[in-house]
Image (cartoon, rainbow, N blue to C red; front, side, top):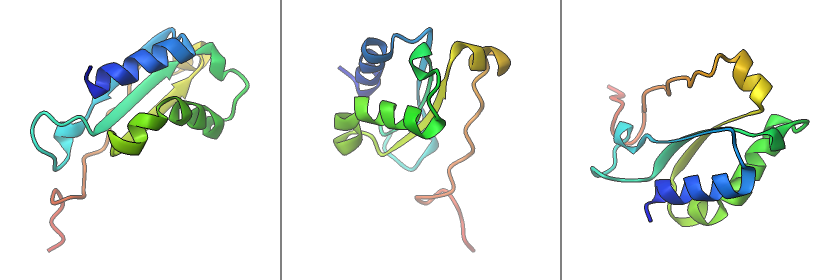
Length: 107
């Protein structure tokens, strides 16, 4: 299975999200075409209720421990409850452009 597929399967199983987006943003970085190394995850789950943001991120990082240790270089997280997702208008924010790894000219 692809890295993206593994991430989706693990988060679905562990968090029973009402909304899940796993976006491969590798193409925005200095990596070979077809890479699966940079991801943005938006996960909406009631399991996050009452948790501070850092604990939510730790929860996702624990679920994806194997991927983070060997397969993922960067992971951006939006971890929300259904109410927070509704207040946000159900929209995913764009990621900023990459400025590292040869994408940014320091001259």
